[in-house]
Image: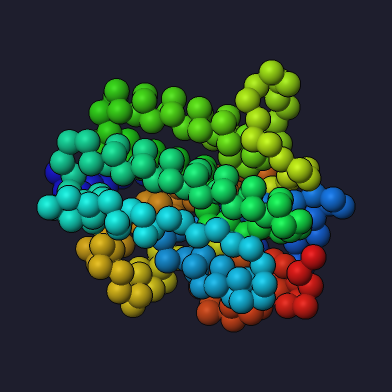
Length: 271
């Protein structure tokens, strides 16, 4: 079995194409006194990194996926990221997806604490924990997780989401701000924290061309079939599962500045 097996019976049915390609209106501003965490969602090479760079240039706080950590952890066979893409051997997919979940959650927690300490009103984050789970589900459906590995990942995901205790981190569509017992562990937080999702909608063909152009070594063997499968999963979750998602189309090479305006308003409006 190759590292990216695709079976038509395992790919969710294509979601109806009824979402707008580009939202003409900016996101509503954060509620008074609240920190709003904006999760920038999307397939591989859908434009998330470029958009985050523009938002950071405008002075907003951003959190990128910890790709550097995944590249730094390595053995004689290469980095963990490289092994995940190139090797379908026993345990590699579970190891990578579990480490990706933990490193993502750690980066998010540190960034939220820092944003609260600085009095930020907005924090832009590359992908939510739900996105991590979508990739793990792909591995499960492709046979890269054993039954036990999936069971341990699913349990770990729920534990991490509960400990992080942020809206937008559960694995349930639409469960952005769940009620929680006062006895449950909480991440210390002031002010109130809310979350919103922005889905960068991009055709697999466009994403594949961008992936090849950006030249990240570990990604060069990723086939378009893998991106197509993940596109369907993103469409099903963010268009028809999770509520309140702002959709921005990135196929037509709309300027990064225009996309940033649609999310955060004009460059002068930071707070």
